[in-house]
Length: 414
Ligand SMILES: Cc1cc2nc3c(=O)[nH]c(=O)nc-3n(C[C@H](O)[C@H](O)[C@H](O)COP(=O)(O)OP(=O)(O)OC[C@H]3O[C@@H](n4cnc5c(N)ncnc54)[C@H](O)[C@@H]3O)c2cc1C
Ligand code: SF4
Ligand code: SF4
Image (tube, rainbow, N blue to C red; front, side, top):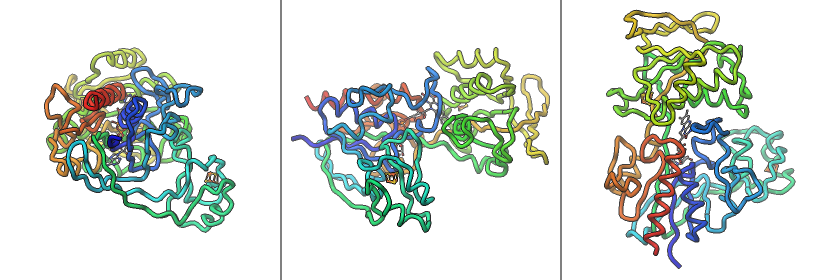
């Protein structure tokens, strides 16, 4: 029997590659460093271009009864997918077709096959939590770093005996034929971009943080509240290109931040009453079909200011005065806002540079670089990449690239 395919990263791209390879009869080992699959998409609420709930993606024949929900999809049921959560690839050696991969497999404190998500352990101890109601595998997680007196009784009283507090991490060496890198992106924490004051005031947040506020499953249950004092927020300002198109941070355009900022502006004006939204920009890059977000939000009263933010002055009542230089009017304007949202750069995920150097791959601004632009997903001999591991990308593009990888692997196995 031929070796399985290794997929690193279980975001939308990695999950798509795993499910489609598995459905084609190819064994896969899907390695995810976190305790739930889904990657960044798990925390985004509504998805452009369709504005569907982000939890709903294509279903498949392994869970046909459930409405299109990707996160309750085949990952744990498909016999051809060996899902390794809390795990990392430590070392890769060997030759294409027969790579030798050393895995560090994290401790399995909670057995997802036994956990019924009854919530008893969460009531007993802070060390147990549910990452998201949509998490996959459907199980609570345990954090051994959180010391709590209730953990032992939680383990003893778990009705299905799903908890093993003594679980240890293990090392395993496997042979794989091909490697798919689907390690995604990270939203830059703009702490060093002094002019925007991130980290100095709780009402200065990033777009990913705004997505959590807008999400009915988030902490505020979708109600727009100021992080500083929990009071209703009525005025939101966004600023584009934070850390992108900037030689001091990332020279590239992060490509999708105009679209997701405008998606958030549309949600704020459509789903929240009397909220004023303004966007400070250099250029609005709503490529292709996404121009509709620009038109719709303009029609809904979103104010667009071409220029740059010059100063932020926190006020005693928790609001922020933002001084903006409007380059079209050639003058300074002052705005009073409740929440200031930074459209921060999308950067390569932690560990990308190590993967690039250990496998001798090309780098494209720190993301994985293609050998040849025409076959974007081929990054080495029997090594492929898809999704945001190749650079900032939207979900439809990530899924298309994952399918291109699947097609390449299937051709090579013929
Ligand atoms: C604020 C915001 C809003 C967005 N809104 C939309 C939208 O509405 N529509 C849309 O189409 N797109 C949207 N996007 C883009 C979307 O998030 C990406 O297209 C999508 O997440 C890419 O999926 P991915 O699998 O390539 O990467 P990721 O989602 O980043 O997943 C990568 C996975 O790999 C894991 N991983 C990383 N490194 C390792 C490693 N070394 N070992 C093991 N595992 C590893 C990570 O933990 C993660 O689970 C938005 C992005 C942002 C920031
Ligand atoms: S008590 Fe057991 S079954 Fe219930 S949520 Fe916790 S681990 Fe799962
Ligand atoms: S997509 Fe828009 S906000 Fe993002 S870097 Fe490009 S121009 Fe700036």
